[in-house]
Image 1 (cartoon, rainbow, N blue to C red):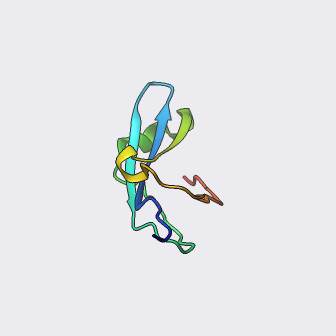
Image 2: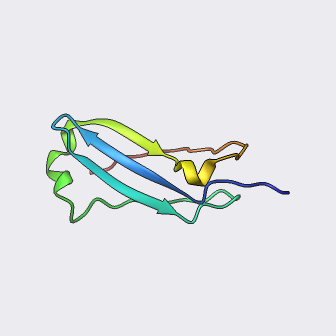
Image 3: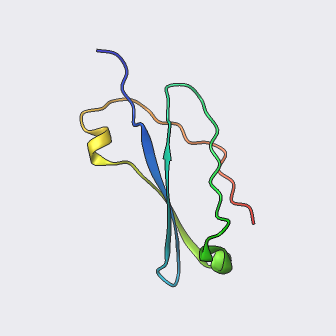
Length: 79
């Protein structure tokens, strides 16, 4: 049947004030690829120092019955 993999993930940043920034990253492929997520224009930047969680979410619809490995590397949060 071939290799299947998630086509997108959701990245979330959460802070101690219970605010959440979410961004869907789509275009995932079976080759290494670099993505950048910009927080500009988000009120979240004003509370950058209060980040308490970094979350990567896979949609159940996107990963049901999939097997394999997803590599996530070199994560940098820059102000």
